[in-house]
Length: 98
Image 1 (cartoon, rainbow, N blue to C red):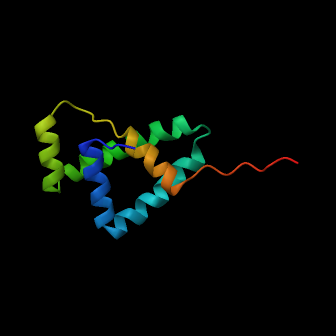
Image 2: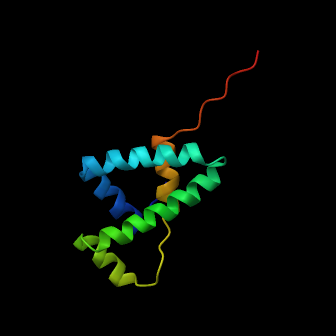
Image 3: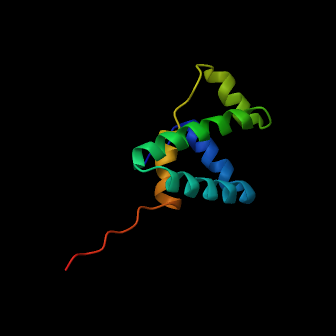
């Protein structure tokens, strides 16, 4: 899966910040439990990740630079959303019927 530069920036940030990563692992699990379809979970997580990206842009220079360069508004976090759901909240395996 290929992440856009903003998604990659956010993912790298989470990897460097253990407390933030733990928070997001929990958040991803919550989203996965609340949605009934994976598509709805991805869209919800996309929204939450973008809000977090915007919030971080006020305090982290790399994020601020990224939003000031683009300036076009909301940036997609769909690929990152799908990736995090796959990594931290995999779908339950279906039992084989005999």
